[in-house]
Amino acid sequence: MERAQLPAAPATPTAPSTDTAGRHRRRRTTAVTTGLATLGLLAGTLAALAGGGSALASSVAPTAAGGALTSNWYASAPYLMPEDNSAPDAGAVMDASGQKAFQLAFMLDSGGCNPAWGGTSSIDTDTTIPAVIQQIRAKGGDVSVSFGGYGGNKLGQGCGTPEATAAAEQKVITKYGLHAIDFDLEEPEYENSAAIHNEIGAAKILQANNPGIYISITTAGTTAGTGWFGTQMLNEAKSQGFTPNNYSIMPFDGGFNGGAAQVAALTSFNSILQTTFGWSAATAYAHEGVSMMNGRTDAAEYFSQADFQTVLNFATANGLARYTFWSVNRDRQCTPVVDPGLSGSCSGVVQNPWDFTKYTVQFAGATPPTTPPTSAPPTSASPGICTLPAWSASSTYTNGDKVSYNGHDYHAKWWTQNEVPTASGQYGVWADDGPC
Figure (cartoon, rainbow, N blue to C red):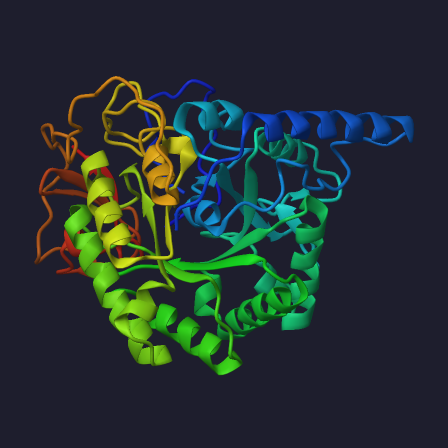
């Protein structure tokens, strides 16, 4: 799933580590407005310094060019971690790809219902994120902030009530002058019914208190659309009478094989939305989104540019409300290109820098800059010679036992017998350590 943080990686993408990782058509802003934004930033900085404060430590008010974008840009904003995983320069990505918005990740609870980046960097003392936001807005873009992600302490868990959760999240909206937010409801929060009640309730409060704010709800995807917990989340939203701009699933890390499998999951999820809310297929698609993972996933699935194109074609043909991916940090080629491991700073497939971001630009209705063609990426890493013992259906395995199966190495996370490694999935007993 989409990860709160991967192991630290060097500034220049290198071979991935073996640790786990880890989403309408309008006109563009002109160069004149961008220039006005730069002047606004300079004036704000000078004013803050004259008053003895820090422009970066203060709230990041939207500038002339950094006002609310049209919703298609928030719907296409890919995830970006500005403080981790060899974060790329956001301005350079904008220039090279044409993307105007980014989904900044992740806002967690540092304890006591206090919002903090990654659960450690308080928004009260943060200086890194304001600088990134100012750079993006100065170039005519904007950001959304994602609450949650995979792992970590979530505000819905630590705040106790929908009202307290909303108050903590409102601090983030006010601090950064946000026009869009995302609720990334994953492990372990989405298995906690009280926490989901808090998050959905908070989203409803924030929607009412911030007219026009763009809200996306992102959760796990399965080959059946979404699982039991995802369905319960939808039922919670129905019971509270809350409707966001979209409900997005993440169709990866669950036995997916290419774009066709993702399209099938989105089709199934559409049926779930119809059944839950009583919508027509068209209305359900208008409230449905997809958040993918580029290149190699946690479960050693491989999604190429062709897979992103397949899903983009489906999304535009059916009027999906959102098309994004995890993550911009990974949208560049590894060295070596393909590796058995997993990285937060490169994709693991053959690509030009920002190839995958250009698909989100197309979904927003813009034409990305052209780059030289690249050779077709492999759909999987070529397996080598497996040296670990082959998995056996009759053997008993315990935590830490290692086996090989179908060209991949695996290790057991707890006791198991007769559980096929390839059927284990993201949260099953077998952890995929990559091709042999």
